[in-house]
Image 1 (cartoon, rainbow, N blue to C red):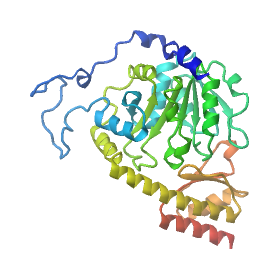
Image 2 (tube, rainbow, N blue to C red; image 1 turned 135 degrees about the vertical axis):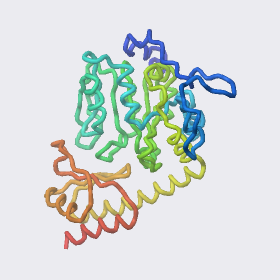
Image 3 (cartoon, one colour; image 1 turned 90 degrees about the horizontal axis):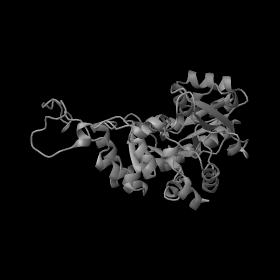
Image 4 (cartoon, rainbow, N blue to C red; image 1 turned 120 degrees about the vertical axis):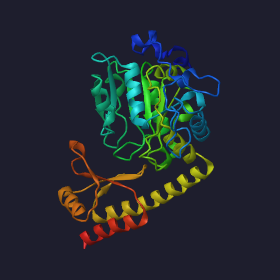
Length: 353
């Protein structure tokens, strides 16, 4: 199957036709040049900050950042795009491949809401199929998505925290050979054994999304990555903004991906997992139905969710509730540090008493 995909899948056949004739905007940094006096970008010559070169436009794809993420992910630098969080990568894919008012995407709920919202803002239809009772892909989904050009699979899934096995993800990639299968791995640092990034060279219709917002503690910096084969990367680069990665973000992200930064991330991930296990146990003891947690959060279902929500509000604890009918009795708890976890556990201990 993978050999057939490799020889028959051509993302140009999925791309918006007008993009194939588009000449991308040539920013000053893309054109480049050599010299000591740079007057080609209408920049100010004055740097009023302690941050070097902040008065100049950054590189579209900062080499230091791309190489750092390549070293971390094991994916070739040429197969990586840095973006303003994974959210921008979702939009870039939809803008590149979906014709407004004509094409559609597919996703599996309950899941991250931005797949559908991003599609809707571009007038792209959404086919939302439900995950099974044990939060796996439905059996006959390939026959139910119609001509969807992009299929989004969140793994680990947000907000349920559940995972689909790598074997089943690979089967899903094979089952949709005419679509782009996007695996959103925003939380993969909490269960790296489920990553499918190593399958990129095997399946040309696979795209993997990553972010530094979760495990790397850089949510405020807005830095994400799209991992894909050369043909998809080339097409997406036609529509990307001239300067999607601000200089301060690039420097923060590159530092986070250094040896010291990776050690910090791994230490903090281990701590969050430990605190999450304590929280999950406390919620279970309280009587909640707690789903297996594979990200930095746990979804718990309560018999009287309104009472629990009110108790959290009174204690000044802000957790996440949902309007989706399938999650009407659920609250999602992000993992946090030990003192805050202690406070949450104490609240549920006192409630049970």
